[in-house]
Length: 284
Ligand code: PLP
Image (tube, rainbow, N blue to C red; front, side, top):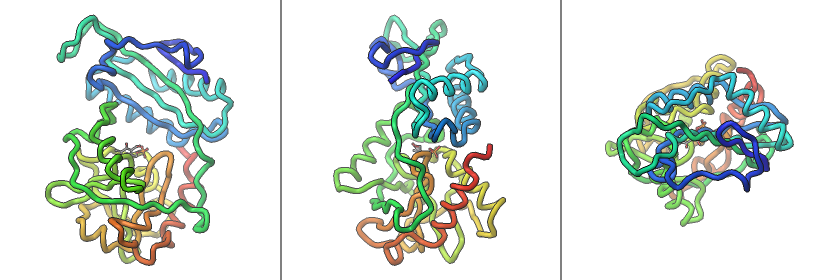
């Protein structure tokens, strides 16, 4: 495959980064994953805006504008066949001559982008829908989860807890027992035909899929939506549980901690939500 590194496109095997890069030493960087189908990206502007906000939060200087990113990503897509691709963007603070915690002021950011094959677009079809089984855990990550940092060990360890049990995701609750998110997804529940998801906070990544879905539900449906704290008991007693992410779009959870969600099948509101998402996801 063809990748982008610091201003140049090259074969993946030619892309080299120093072990003194702060991305390697400290996880000192920001990343994005953007889905692209037949050359069309989902939520491109929002992904780039989140990337810029993360870079600003970490005071990483990267001079690429939204237009620069657009051209970079379009080139990357074309050079890799323009099929079903996940676009990975990664900006680390850069390579220093020594390992020191404080931000060096005189280095330039390392900018890397590559793409990988992803499954075809998720479909709003109960028979074909993936059925997710999840576990719950206390959220043991850090308190800046709104920053899409490349330092993902907290998320990786939670995901591994689930993977080791043959489950798809680990959904997390804060010390007070309120839902935050999954290790790589945002979480929604449905109760009595109301779609509910926790409000954004520093314990939650502002998911692009989450935001697109909330906007679509409010603009293009009569389904009632609430952003409010969700207790663990509400998750365990929900009529439906969904995970959202760029690759999964809206995904139905059929089991939480070994117990079926309602009748153990994707629900009717899930079908409507994924239908809405399929219909409007390319509108910026
Ligand atoms: N929460 C976490 C921790 C994530 O890593 C992700 C992204 O993979 C999401 C939520 C979903 O975000 P998005 O919809 O922007 O992909």
